[in-house]
Amino acid sequence: MSQLRILVTGASGLLGSNLALQAAARYEVVGLTHQHPLPNAGFETLQADLLAPGAIAGVLDAAKPDWVVHCAALADIDACELRPELARQLNTELPGQLAQETARRNLRLAHISTDAVFDGTKAPYKETDAPNPLSVYAKTKRMAELAVKAAHPHWLIIRPNLFGWSVNGVHSLAEFFYNNLSAGKAVNGFADRLFTPLHVGFLAEIVLELLERGVHGIYHAGSRDSLSKYDFGMMIAQQFGFDEKLVRPADAESAAPRADDLRLNVSRLAQALGRGLPSAAEGVQRLYDEWHNGHRQTLQAMALAPAKG
Ligand SMILES: NC(=O)c1ccc[n+]([C@@H]2O[C@H](COP(=O)([O-])OP(=O)(O)OC[C@H]3O[C@@H](n4cnc5c(N)ncnc54)[C@H](OP(=O)(O)O)[C@@H]3O)[C@@H](O)[C@H]2O)c1
Image 1 (cartoon, protein in one colour):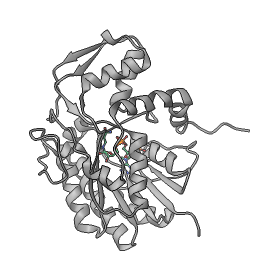
Image 2: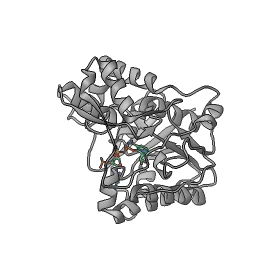
Image 3: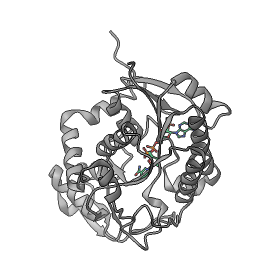
């Protein structure tokens, strides 16, 4: 049997890059990028603006995937407030159309949503709890869930919270703490913001496993335990041996409306997988291991021109 082909949209992003790299060890992978090409990806890549007319069908025709993992999005919450129409097109319309087109072609689709669909008043959140998105980002992501469910008979939606190393090195909360603390700079850690952060490598494994098993439905994907963003910053300082006094407890402040308590209940996912989810500390340990084993450098080198010779 020929190898399965997976199209990963958003392959230059935090989740897409890590997931595509991991998937490439077992499958044929096509990574789709837009403004940030990956000339040194180590897997097949395509470049396209998925909002351009005919782009979805064109990319599916070119990639010929069996499965699609849709990671492309406008995932910057403040950018969504500034450009709500772009957010609506990228975060709602695009997943809806992709779900229609993948359903028509009988392809499996994993759509990535977010913990931010909740308002923070009733955590820890189960999949059966009613969303109440606060920001433009969260509203457009919630609308996407409904559009994907309506369009694809075998929909799979994952609501994660994630952290890890990224191609540009400045993307995730973990990188924010790492970059500042390693430079000896003090940082505020929001002591009143609670979450369940899952290392992107664990999340990538889980998404692939759910696709492999043909799982259908909605799943919360977070660490098995919860903590504040301040505690997370302290955990990174301790793991990497940075000065813990540089992490200062602070109250959250932000331009876009954000929920304070986005802890997820991950029991349904644990049951589907037949095992418990990793803890936040295990994720930070993996972040540290990847810092040593060259994974961070591999990711960043994906954006560089390949060496000649
Ligand atoms: N990061 C988090 O903390 C977090 C938390 C919860 C949920 N999520 C969700 O997880 C998913 C992945 O997030 P992420 O943080 O990995 O995102 P990201 O790093 O911001 O990456 C976004 C990706 O979307 C691509 N993209 C943007 N506009 C496009 C277009 N017009 N056509 C084609 N591709 C386009 C970008 O390509 P170029 O860069 O090449 O332009 C990039 O690869 C998203 O659905 C997000 O909502 C993220």
